[in-house]
Amino acid sequence: MSSVKPGLGSKIDKIAAKSASERKTRTLWGDALRRLSRNYLAMGALAWILIVIIATVSADLWVPQNFGDPTLIDTQTAAQTRLQPPSSEHPFGTDDMGRDLFGRVIYGARVSLTVGIVATAVAFSVGILIGAMAGFLGKWVDALLMRMTDIILSFPYVLMVVLVMSVLPQEVRGAWSVTAAIAAFSWGAFARLFRSSVLSVKENDYVLAARALGASTGRIIFRHILPNAIAPALVIATMTIGGIILTESALSFLGLGIQAPEISWGRMIDDGRRFLTHQPQLVLYPGLAILSTVLSFMLLGDGVRDALDTKSKD
Image 1 (cartoon, rainbow, N blue to C red):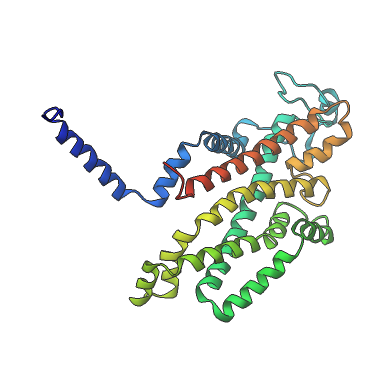
Image 2 (image 1 turned 90 degrees about the horizontal axis):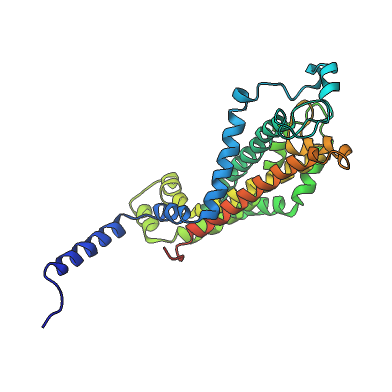
């Protein structure tokens, strides 16, 4: 005698049909977003990055003072408020010119994040374009573009950026010159990685079918190859943002990056190192800002890598 209750079989059939329907509508990117949302460490890192971005974008609304140009600071006021410890009025204290350190950290994030994100976006765009052309067209185009990429990769990345910035006049050094120098020597890794992805994707059946139907090279690259080969490059791009923020901070600390009156976290550490022994907060807070932001980008990149891994379990 069957032990299945009446109506239970129909319920099981409905659940199975619903599961089958959900599986049919799932996509690679949809599954990746679902897996990423379950990674609480990566989501916490993303939340911190969004908080920093929102704070820097809205800084003019709630941090109204000018923290950049020292000539705009009243000398008498600066003498009375310089090097104050943290308080309710100045949560992080003040620097040697009486400027609120919390506000400077917020405004410094604007420059550091801009350099990191823009330089990564430029290097990413150039890299995937060259990688796509090399991997898809092959033959002499592949050989030419990859030899050019090998030349870029053969240069010590940080040393080349330092060399470029050191030969520029001081009045030219700034956020955009740092961004251009970093992007010029960081696209090679994206090109090499994306070329490998394109070589594995372009032999798939849907690419061969599109080619047989007479689709143009541009349509095949941007409609069929790019969406399916870009995942590894996105992981590297997320982590690269953190690395570029570190590079910009190092350049500014050495005096080769952001120049006054612009503010960046590396510049703030350089300004505060003279008072390290008796006013460590001048270095501590911008250093913690660099640490937390770079770590967040690394954790987010690690989470994106796990989310895009099709072999991972749901």
